[in-house]
Length: 486
Image (cartoon, rainbow, N blue to C red; front, top):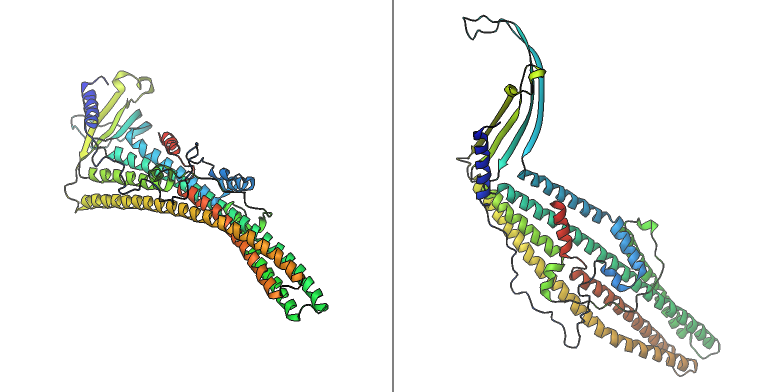
């Protein structure tokens, strides 16, 4: 194989591949115009800035509820949607590795052995020399190498697109994880809010039944009319109806938690409980941070990178393809004893180029398709950013509004409780009638339920804000997946 032609061709191909750049535009992450510099928050509501900054990956632990932590862990372990997202990421990584193999030569080891009889009556090649019947062996071990010379970066752009798609799949997995864990937290706090409402209604029914007994005694003593008994009885029955509706809503929330955690609804139950004392204070940061914290935005950005690389792949079709024809090096002999001797050495190498002269506009259509795909990806990216800003701003506004409403409702509940205590005493003394007492009872129950709904709304809004801010997703996870692909 000490032939200068072999090395000349190999060196020339390598230099040609190195010297040429990649066709198509290089990717630059786009900027989003008109992104606000701060959130629109009422002056009376101060935004906290905890020292730990961005929420941790297990963001739900900031609520300090062990049962929620347990449900979230079960969701991450058993939820089928998350398992499917992980499998899609594995597929994308495998596909990226497969595309990456295009940058390396394909090497094959071949071996052949045959024994054949040549006919003595075959056509003559030289009439002066008679043919003879011959039996001969043929042993041919060799190595072949084939390689597409990436002189215009077609393969490099293809690998770039595949890696961006794999990184997009990694971001999609994190987005599925974030959405599912947020759904679990929302369903859990909704259930706990219903638990509190059920407790209030149950307690109210107990008090209403006591008042009903008192009213019956008053009727027997001539101090109350039959209509007073009927009115108080109707009040207790109405509260019982509310209780049944709340229990049905709780069952639906419980069934949702079962599905999210990968358990059949019929096999799942959750004992009653209460909401935590208060939701955590969430640092919102600045709007621009969303571009680094939200996995759906990261997914949209990686889709742009993949679409941009596909433009280069499409443009490369305009130019000739250059392939190293299967280079062969090996031995051939009719005898095993001489198979690996110098005279038995065989080799060949060559380069093949091909260029389409007419394709009916197929290549132009391919480039136009790739460019349009990038425009779509860019629009999706910008839309993702706008939606992220909207969701975060809405969550901040809701938290602010509910925080103000909570203070007012707490005052209302205190006043309603005091009014109820006074009215019961007055009713016992005959100073207030049954209608007044029933009205106060209904108002008290409504105030307590509204208070519970506001508290539940605060927790749900805190979950929405954490989700809108991207939970605990970090760019470091994307870098880890990139190392896996390399």
